[in-house]
Length: 317
Ligand code: AMP
Ligand code: MG
Image (tube, rainbow, N blue to C red; front, side, top):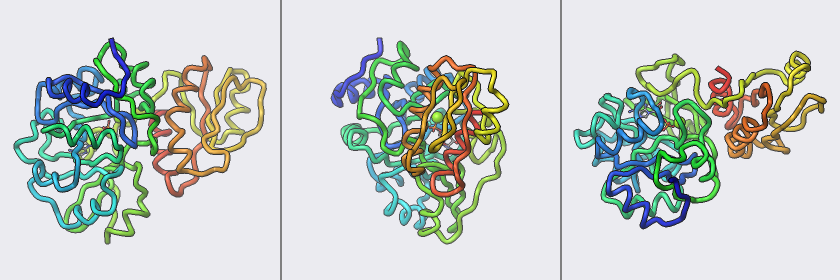
């Protein structure tokens, strides 16, 4: 039985016993476990069906804790953290031995983040250990942005979902590595590259490969609905698939067609922050609409556009 509730005390007790609890964060719901316990962390991989090489993000209550878990915390990391933590920015640093290999997918680096959700922070402050928490969905599928999404996808596999309402950012954190004053973006997400550029002198991008040693979890197929998703120009796609029952995912308005059985407009005013917030809920809803295909259009390449497109491309792969 998987229960949904708002009892932080109960969540803390379960986590302290080495159990899994789904927790709210501002990005997406996380499937949390004691990051210092190999045994607890292995349960996360089992519940998600996550490949063992895909490392977990370790959540802490404040950036002051980074040095407990990372060998070296560069000055630039603390500068970025003073600006963006708590928030959707994850730092990949060389790990200390206290972090078990299971948490980092066998690698010698650890990903650290301070979530900006009051319930997640209160929970972390009560606990004597940090929380390893990947998105609370089966590996490869659509990320959850409400407690009900978690329950629908992980029912029976975890005892408790801590409900903190819908996620305010709606896409995962931006993951960066910092070396010699150079920031390398390993995954696009909730902090825009332009915001990083305002603080860091040099911002680079990791090469896009299906298995990238610097970011082992960036698989080509991810965030995927069960219904096949096709990404492209909506007018062309609607023409091409006019004989099928389709669900449409659009940024703003789009032309009506008889064969559209469901649709989601991510932002009527074409605001990309709002689009990011609505993305995964829209995918969950369209996936449940019984369509033959989901047709989605790419977002403009500004603000959260690239981060949303990254997810749509993987959802289509
Ligand atoms: P998720 O928690 O499911 O959103 O995935 C977290 C992602 O963060 C992983 O798939 C990796 O791409 C990245 N990540 C986590 N830990 C590390 C690490 N130690 N080194 C590099 N990338 C990491
Ligand atoms: Mg995920």
